[in-house]
Image (tube, rainbow, N blue to C red; front, side):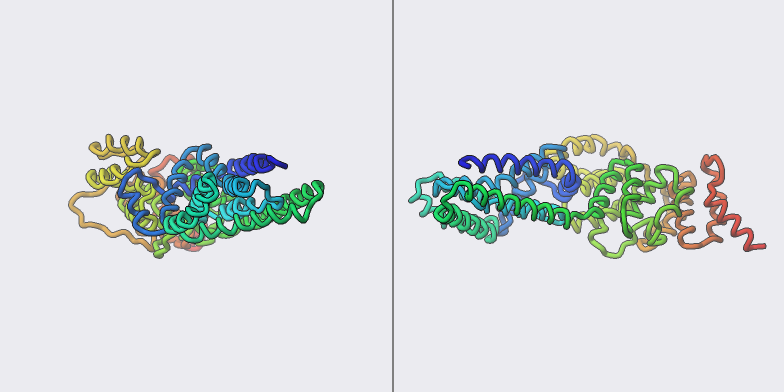
Length: 459
């Protein structure tokens, strides 16, 4: 029992790491894509200028390591486990006793359950960890020095990280001290003492397991994993996620239709997959929804409609700030559009990060060429007036792209799908002859069926 805290720390760390590698692995790339830590004085000043924001700075420093497959998971597992170990070591320094109820486990387990939500703020973990660490370091001082310095340090910690964190530390330490000092006087039998500890551990584990299963959101996981597959262009995996998804989601159908095109199945299997949102299953109309601003660029980039893709990336920059994927997109789009100076502005930002600096250097070399691998802008006719995109309706844009580039197969298949889902059979038949531009082995059965039905209605 003397070293039970080290055993529990090891077990807790191992279990957390296992969950982070398995059931919660999808959250790490998601969080990493929401932040961009920069090694600059101006970036630090943003968090120093406002009380209570320093914890977010520490959180962003930790989150940047989520870029690596294992490092970020190991770091977070250690930090969460230390939320148990640090108060235990602090109490042992102050009282020389162990807590039979193991109350110090509660913050780690509670924050682990909260971490299941993609909207969870990791700064809550790093701020509490920093508060516990400061308290433990103070406990290494002589007891009289600890008493004199603890209150000023608690006040400074509250000012820098937020007042809730030193309060939580004080409450956890107080409860742990009371448990460590009072219960051994009431429980004199070692067997009863051991049984009390074991029962508490079983209760904590049971409630954590129940809460984890009860709050686990498989639909949210599938959506996040689907976007990860879209970024990697793993289109078969996108379709696999779409098949597993239960319920309606415009975003899932949006990704699914992209995968149908890239796997060559859109003209054949369009109606075999849910199209609950009609034409809005093909694209995301601009409805001033800030959460959607992160996703609209995917389709336009693949269509070669770079100006519109850049507009969506700019909206995401306004909503979410300087994140790695948004800045990378703006660099690529500005290079492709011939705006090298604007691209260099974003390249300079990215060069100040840890894991994206090499990509920034690569695009710095590409900037003078005006070409980006994987980006093929729709040809523009010089001398024509500027054209404003229809942000509510994809149909006119698809027609425009097809007229500008008759070899754009994606624009053609999306136009055909748009006309099918909007039940515009006459226009479908009018645009169908364009199919001769592409090497289809035969007329897709879906297209042939619609054509035959139209001919019958005209007789």
